[in-house]
Length: 116
Figure 1: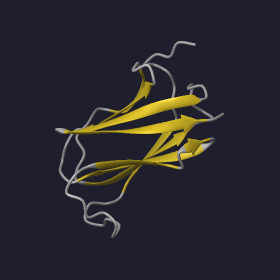
Figure 2: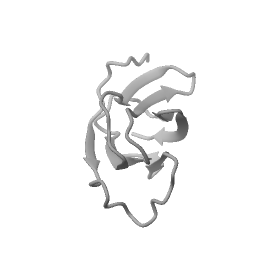
Figure 3: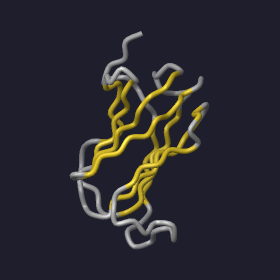
Figure 4: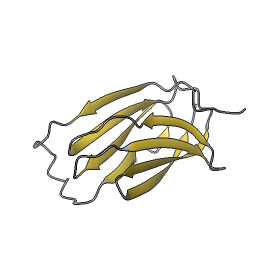
């Protein structure tokens, strides 16, 4: 099965209001976390921006092919952001994927397993 950038992914986007960050967020660097990491129904992709920027979140196959862009347009303010990933409603088949997060000069990846 070949996946393309136009595949469907259902996400729900929320932002913690600027200035009201959880006590655990003390980083001066952006970060990315995904939980739970064996996604059978829904998972949360959480990322933190310590500065205003245009973040990019993309999903890649283990072969390095971009299969989906989750976020990639629009400037976001400093803050903690969450995206809900519904694995059952997405067009991605079961398997291992990499989520790549880029914010300014910072880049990070997280390995995730989708199980339908």
